[in-house]
Amino acid sequence: MALNKKEEQEQAAVKGGGTAKATQAPSPAPTPGKGKPTPKRKEAQAKNLRPLVPQDTKAERKRAKERIRERENVEYEAMRTGNVSKMPKAERLPWRVYIRDYVDARFNIGEYFIPVAIVILLLSILVSFLAPGAAYLSLILMIVMYVYLFVIIIDVAVMWHRLKKRLAERYGESSVARGSRSGTYAWSRAIQLRRWRLPKPKYKKRSQYPADVRGK
Picture 1 (spheres, one colour):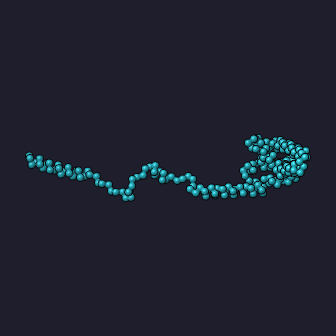
Picture 2 (cartoon, rainbow, N blue to C red):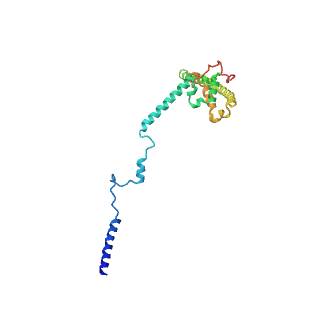
Picture 3 (cartoon, rainbow, N blue to C red):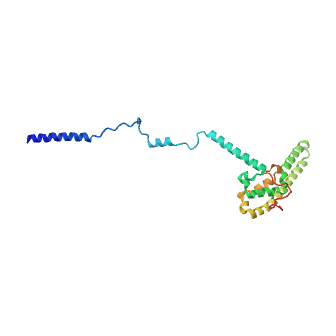
């Protein structure tokens, strides 16, 4: 009996040792190129980000200015030559084209306001230096200028009254609304000399009128 127990103990010891060796997991092989800890998620995302604004902002601003200058040159040349398709967007609006033709086709008293005002101002200065005692001359010149200005206001008011009615009939109320600035556009063009107007007039003054502008 003693021998049988001893043999059973030896066999159990042998089996236990084999099982222990089998259950031992092999040590993991070193990962190639893994010489530092794995970066955190935020650090990895920060490295992948790219700036939305280009680095060379000075060169980009310069190119943007050149593009704007080139576009403005094209628009100015279009207004000088009358090429409506290449004019600024505001100048291509149908009612603005109509306003320009209407104003250019009529005789505007205010067209000469700037040269007349300059002449009266120079005469007033000369009178004050050459004839200090003749103050009434300066007064007469100022009265003439104010009378001329009053006549201009009346002429512009009559022009806008007729033009506003035509614009509303042809292009609707939006063409004469306050936000359209059609009135300002009309009177500012009416008091400019023809050679200073941009876009350039298409018709000579008091010549053949456009069909839709005839009769002022």
